[in-house]
Image 1 (spheres, one colour):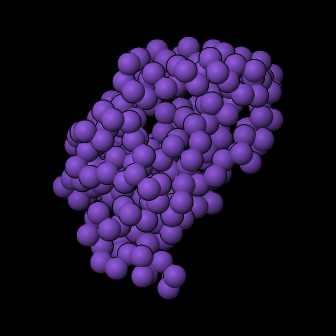
Image 2 (cartoon, one colour):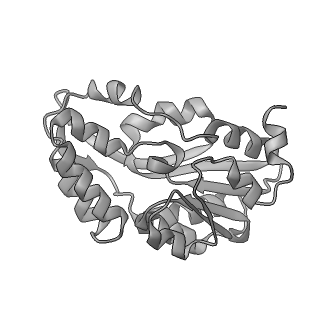
Length: 221
């Protein structure tokens, strides 16, 4: 079956309501310190790679059992599950690309039915976080490259892709997508996006995509 298009979302504060690294930081006792770095990075005031390295270093020593605890503190954004179901119903593929951590978000995304996802990976040694990540860092450029890669693999023109995010590191993929949507976003992202959602409900994505009667279909699926 040919796919109508591809929708790629950021994870933290977009597909879910929380910032995962901030939740981890609270358990490590460095909540305020990490949240301040996160905020500056999201506004585009700090390089994402440097800010990620700095924040992850503060998590050193946390037990890997923290992943399950943090997962229980995560809630999907309003309309997230319904959006995924409706997009699938209309022939779209859904992906998440995140500067967060696959160790935590993988089971959540699999349960929701997201087709593809990519995120950073926290390094574990002897059951403890080392304060480092392993593998390629998912930053602004990597997010754009992942959208481009998926579109090519699925034979979907970039004009038929949608990118949704809230922070500066989402701007790369939003620049190349056919439709860019800012979701509860920082001013720099709202200014750059073609459309914006500010009510926290992801079902609005379908309306902005021009999928007719999205809200009326929600209860019928």
